[in-house]
Amino acid sequence: MTRVKRGTTSLKHRRNVLKQTKGFRNSPKSKERAATEALLHAYTHSFHDRRKKKGVFRRLWNVKINAGTRPHGISYSVFIDKLTKAKIAINRKMLAELAENHKPAFEAIIQEASK
Image 1 (cartoon, one colour):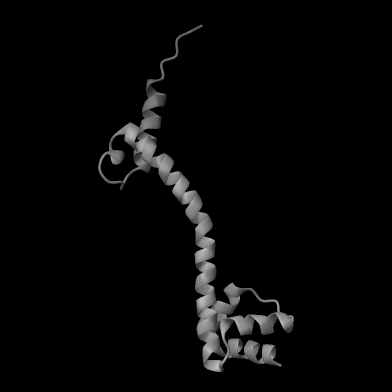
Image 2 (cartoon, rainbow, N blue to C red; image 1 turned 90 degrees about the vertical axis):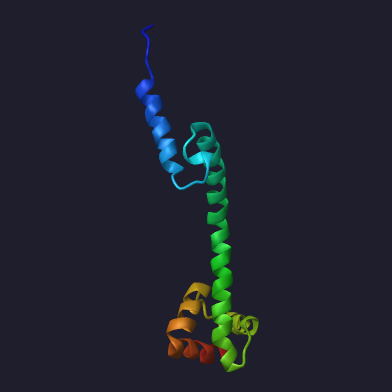
């Protein structure tokens, strides 16, 4: 079997790893072994935080909807309950957008749900 020299492949891999750790502090930005270890941790955190982000946004939407309903004398939970009883199917993301930027449309939804 012929000999395979992996110099270029290893160098390419090393450069790629160090390119991904650009901006890290101390040794992970410049030392290959520390960089690979730091990347493994960074990948797991990024995976978990992509999942967490969805919950963070949902909480933000709830706060925006609550802020939009309070001037009308309704709390968030009562408003959502009225929406489900009135069979108005609109998601919280859209409700938050309406509450923040399109007040007349949001007020119309509140009136429709309160009937």
